[in-house]
Length: 354
Image: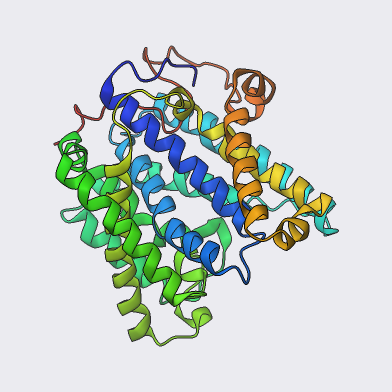
């Protein structure tokens, strides 16, 4: 996770995308604290949730193309995803207990807060060889995703989200560099801004909009209170809208090295740590005060969150939290040169199966 990023323009592009996405993830979590009864912010929040986790999941799939299940790859997956999950699951359980006066409950099979994504990434990456063996992987993954929403499964191992976001991971497995090159053309960039503006306008007109669970993908049609026919139709519509927004986002990502490019190589740190800061803000009671400030409070919170993401990506913070974010496993054999601990490390998949 200390790799010098951005030496290759393609690597700079993906590191830029990862940093922008982690900023949006943190902003989304922060806005949840003050979004009620705020029309404009609610619209922005809805648009962001329409694409930020699908885009993040897609990138995880794109950079999982080399995963074949070799022992050294599984060991890296254990050290970079599973062990951090177990550590931060305990931290967030403790934070919830302290801040919300809840009994401390360490239940690794039921992910707490943002820890669900680590469980999902672990399971998605382990499933990569399976999707290479399937004839129509994207179609099958969409079918699995839709079917999951027709069940009444519980939240063990975050399975609703694992299955419902699955098509984005599989899509990432199927993409090649040329597909992203199409999104960096001048035509794509000119189309991206109107798409995002129209999405924002639509979300504003429809605000407060649909139930948040439609976008967080954590419940099925029964909990959403709709028939299975309506559920399938709306989920397919959300897939289509999400694809447009994801494409628009990637079209807007800078292609060259920027001041934040290097920070995109270490996104696990701000992802895992920013939620603890938000819990601290909840304990301090700052969110009602920010909400009372209206637009000024929204701007202050947004600036504070972006600043926090940058600070959580800096070397001093990484040195302190490296034992939790990158816990070492005793080496059993020499790992291939050039491998890193970042589960979303930027390595070109050009040599993966075509």
